[in-house]
Amino acid sequence: MPLIRPMCLEDLTEITYWEPILFGLSAWSREDYEQEMTENPFSHYFIAEVDGRIAGYLGVYLAYEHAEILTLATIPDYQRQGIARSLLHHAFDLARQAGCQVMSLEVRQSNQRAIALYQSEGFARVAVRKNYYADHEHADLMIKEMRENG
Image 1: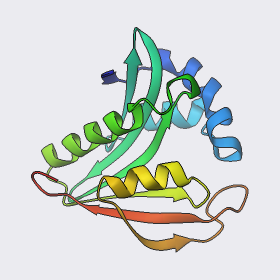
Image 2: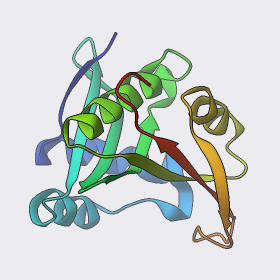
Image 3: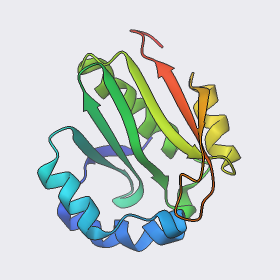
C-alpha cells in the first residue's frame, strides 16, 4: 500500500521527467503543473510513494458537485502493483468529502489497461472526444456516479 501525500513543487523535476515517457505529446510541462498547483484552488495533486520513491501521481479537480481526474500515472517500475487503484480510491475519498456527486475523466481509447481499471471501479463510457490528444487520438469520456459506499 503506497503512502499518498500532497504533491509539492519539489516533486516536479521528477514528475516532468516522467510526463513525456508516460503521455507523449500530451505531456504537461513544469509550468502547467506550477500554474495548476499555485493558481487553481479547485485542482489538487498527490504523490504515491513506495519506500520513499515516487511510484505514481494524481491530479483531481473538485468543484461543487463535480470531480474530474486531470491526470493519473504510475511510474513504469511500479505498474501492475495497485498504485493507480490506490490513487483512484484517494480521489474518490476526496470527492465524497467535497460533496461531489459525479466524477469524470478522459482516457485514450488505446489505453485498454486504464479503461479496464476505470470500468472495474464503476466508470462508464458516455461519449467520445474526437481528436482529443495532441497526436489526434480519440478519448473516451467516462463518468462515475459518486455514492457513499461505491
